[in-house]
Amino acid sequence: MNKTSIEWCDYTWNSITGCFHPCRNTYCYNTMKATSPLNRFGARYKAKNGSLVYEKNWKSRQTGQCHIAQKGEIYPYGYDPTFYPHRLNEPLKVKNPAKIFVVDTGDMFGGWVPEEWIEQILNVVRHCSWHTFQFLTKNPERLIKYEFPDNAWVGTSVNSDKDIKRSNFIKQSKAKIKYLSIEPLLGPITFDLKGIDWIIIGAQTGKNPFIPKTEWIDEIIKQSNKYNIPLFFKENIKRYSNYFVQQFP
Image 1 (cartoon, rainbow, N blue to C red):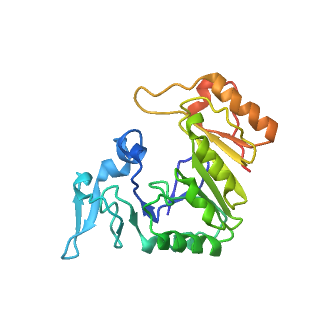
Image 2: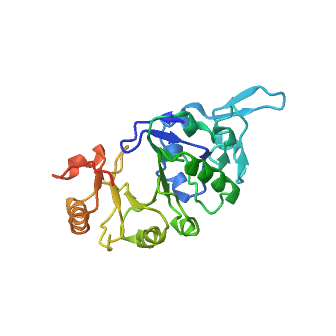
Image 3: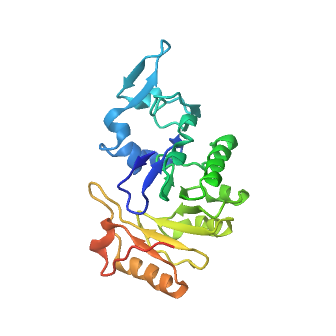
């Protein structure tokens, strides 16, 4: 588990890495940005003799399947979904209450993730009642089957009105806090935000980023005021709005 520069949490806990979402080939930070750990260091895996091997061309390690890593391995199969059972006890070592972003280098609730991986992680969440665990998925329909403890916040990624189905699914989840991560904002959000407990808003970064319109941001602010939804503006969207706030539920 690592301290993080992500503005809305204190730690990231990556007991799973990798995913099969199409965005891993377009704008995913972990796979597409030259500065990401995956692209800087590549895959680290154990050879048959037990020694660690570093492979800069991490894509050559991918098989299109799910994997379980050994201790010491990092992205051993590139960005294929990989479970790290030896990382499960990491939140127990942090004694002060913290906001912990669960799996920022993959999607824990992707349809390819085995049920037993999810249950092992949720068992840790239930045990660590002093922490707040923040989950984020592009597959929110899978959340509906789970009963989340009160220290779990569940969210989904939306970019524009085309993602209304994700918003509807997250509202059906059995969690105390349901949130939307609108990052990057790529179009208007006009669907009803009633039933959402928190909203994160951010802009696309990198070379030639998409520029969000001020009126799109204003519409989100208008609905947040109507329904009393806390907003968390990331620093990267400050230049596109006259309004800036960083609130938590």
